[in-house]
Image 1: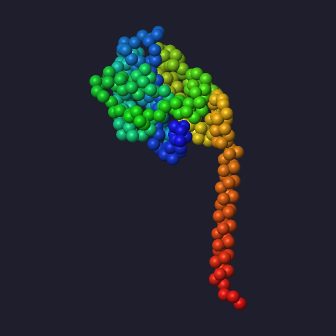
Image 2 (image 1 turned 90 degrees about the horizontal axis):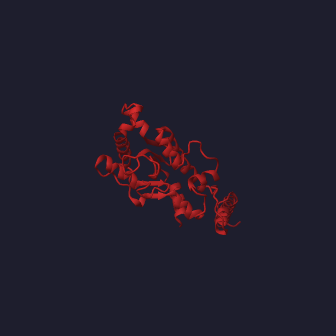
Image 3 (image 1 turned 180 degrees about the vertical axis):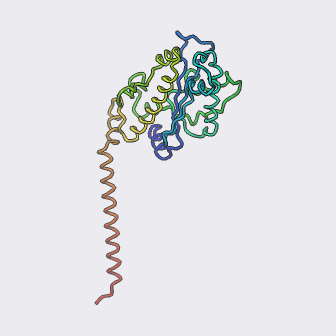
Length: 266
């Protein structure tokens, strides 16, 4: 079974074991960014449990408000605020490390779980609870496995979103996130992260139903979509009904024969 089929099947059987995750940061690149450190700050992390759709946000603006830090003092308190944000996130992670974490290209220290761990170490001097590589699932790679490398135009998350509807007005690109950070628009950054996680869930559900629209071309992809179509599902239902009818006929014949053999001759 392909990685694509395996994931859809496992989520359908055990949706409570899957968590969707995404985060926003100061910037992915050094160009045009004024940093006081070597790695970009984390501004929000959003986690959603697939089965319940319950969403937890670990956001810079929320921490600042909890800590009674005035808006004009947020920039001077970035280290303290981000440290609390990451401490809360990893407290949440600690008892859920055996779950499956579905993400979008969070694969390295530039953008990924390693980046989150690195920022935690920088700010606390300690090692965070580690999410094993084996339970990290890159949704972008899964869709590539199922639909081919051309499943959407680049950037693929936004490309796939546009193929299946409109761009969410809360969606921010990486460049737009950097601009929002410079303006201290942390609520916008958090809202963007939330909308991306919600899209992950929506895309998975569409894929499970065979209704996810992609830009993929090719004979095998077309056949695969045909097999997942409503026509195919209707055919499967009819086949099952015919099979059930055949079983009922066999039972009726067996009962008739049993009754006939048990009835004494006149």
